Length: 486
Image (cartoon, rainbow, N blue to C red; front, top):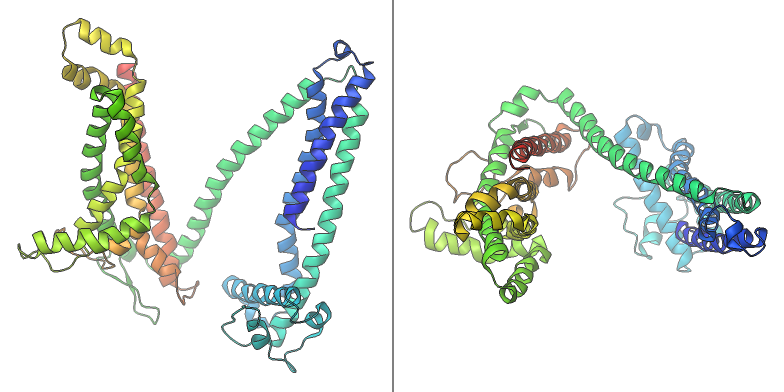
């Protein structure tokens, strides 16, 4: 049974447990709910939770542990060269999984039987050609060791699926039986259910924190591997970005940082004034009829995929800026430029600034406005001297979100600003950002043990620190103004 159908089965058993728990509680109380400590529904929920949660825990744990156990057993069948480094082992296991998936597809499509898939040998069959018949493309011929590992992988995975099904269903039924056994008039079902829900909330928050820790650790560990191969002083202070997988790379970070900040600055110059002024108009001046039309129309921009904005930058904004401004002024002849990407990212971010700022402005208490009007202030004076200062902490959050998105944007930069890493003040020259280079270094035929690939993690860690710094500054500003206006 697949994990999905097993999950559906658990939910069905939980529903059955809810019904049985409620019915049993009423039966033990002689049909009178007043004889129960808790409401009947709590007894049903207790049985459902006791059926579902332990089974889900076993299922999740099994899904985490099973691949590790299988990889360790299958890894013994791989050639010694695949066990020399973690990267080599990972690549070898990718090939094993790909071949195992191809064998499963071949069996499912009737190209071969399950017995054939288990007995096939590279000495007598072109495995690559057989798997190509079911749409599995392999980059090279399948070695004897890889095929043996893939066959073992299939067998262990099937055994694991059977064991998983038995274990999960056994735990679910045991939990249901235990819940029904303790159900009675004096059982404090409400207290138990509330304790379980509280524990689930704590676990959920812990998972969010641990996920963040895991992200940081993954970037930090790979970044340390990079800095063991490449001097950190040349990375942070180098002025040339020229990766070369054949050797002699110059991986200076400064040009990428400059391009990232330059494009983000242009986008913020566009997004913040337009978004903020739009929010002020909608919140303070627009009639309900105008607001009902304009606000949804602006928010439509937020639903447009960034690749569409990239095409807009490539085909429309870039050529217009080149033909009307850059070329006549002698500033450049390329449609890909900082200004192109910055303008389009700014347009992309207008809905984030305007929508959030509009909600924040509307949340300012009307009493503040009325008090200002009572002192004789005009509407514009009230907006400038009362509403905006009171809403400034929230507006800073909106600006921060727009800045973070501008810094992290990839597709628009790749299509609108080019891929040149350079230091220049000319906004009509092609430049690039850290995010574009992260994607570039991790795609294609790359060696994940080389500094030219590991540099992507160093760039990611630097980008994380940069955005974290923005958050810290924004929080300090918010705290300052909250103390002043609350």
